[in-house]
Amino acid sequence: MVTANSELGYNSKVEGGVIVSRADAAINWIRTNSMWPMPMGLACCAIELMAVGGARFDIARFGAEVMRFSPRQSDCMIVAGTVTYKMAPQVRRIYDQMAAPKWVIAMGACASSGGMYRSYATLQGVDRIVPVDVYVSGCPPRPEALLDALMKLQTKVRSEPSASRLLSA
Amino acid sequence: MSADALTALKAKFPQATDRASADHPAVNVPLGDLVAALGFLRDEWAFDLLMDVTAIDWAEGAAPRFTVVYHLLSTTRAGSYVRVAANCAGTDAEPTAPSIVSLWPGANWHERECFDMFGIKFEGHPDLRRILMWDGYPFYPLRKEFPLAGIETELPVADIQEETGTRVIAAPMMGGPFVASAGEMNLTDAEPRAKDESWADRATRPDQTPLRQVKD
Ligand code: SF4
Image (cartoon, rainbow over all chains, first blue to last red; front, side, top):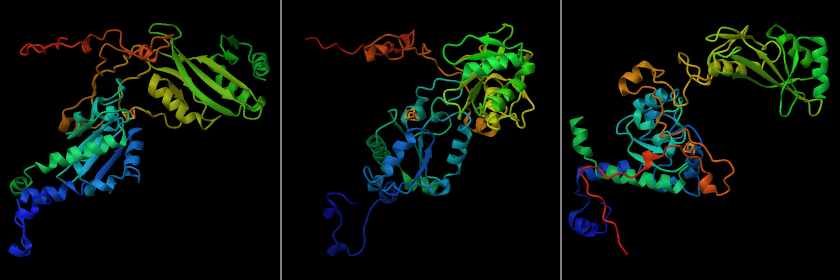
């Protein structure tokens, strides 16, 4: 829709107030630019997550600044920190309570693989309990890395067959 | 100071003996005298702050197997810090010690942690539940027989385990535990590594020809 050749695709003098596009493109455009995160801040990585929300890195540039502390209002769970086995069921419960469509970013070594905690108490990667879309390396990842993960996720969402999924749901 | 307090303690409780210690003075007392001895230090010698309650597991089959250790600090007499140790009673599976929550309310969570990690039952504790691991976890992780990687068991919530098919597993140790080489000045060499790092060796997949080496 908002591409360099939009002049070719849409000319208001000719077509008036009508825009022709694919439903997928329209739906995905809406979804990618208001991806409200569920901040699952469980350990030190959450500090970097807060920095991403601050003015310096400003995740608002990507439409994801509205941290929702209610799973019902969020689209993307950012698991930032060490997930212990004691906490793992709660992470899954909150994921289950999020309304579809929903995505998950595993931020940092701990969330991705258990990180340095190869021990009896730590879940060895949050992908054992929730499906993960993007993994971010680092301990902790730089805020830029999380922004990159968000952009990667947006790229992924842009190519999803949203319309057919909505119709078949 | 600390040593005077322990001298007075030994005069009052003749069964108390000196305990080897690298820094602060320490004393062994019989389990029966423990609460009275700690109360004596608190009331007569102004050890008003209980810093820590911890335990030692000497080894499987050792007698005594478990020892509880109390760290006391005085906030009014500068530099006063002592440790009091006592061997636990009870069996190896269920060692016991008296609770000192009546002396320091702050002992509550310390004793819960000690119970959680070593399985020491503190008799008279108002609410002896696990504090770090979840209720129903079947092991005591700081006991000598418990492996660092853990033991496979159930997740705390049954329906989540069913839904995800995930259990509490023994963590992959990848040749670990990871130990730092002491005395190495070069930070890269001193980094913690596993004794056996063969898992990190590059191997070619059977169906793949090795990458062409660039020759100069
Ligand atoms: S990856 Fe590192 S910074 Fe992030 S939660 Fe784990 S230990 Fe903390």
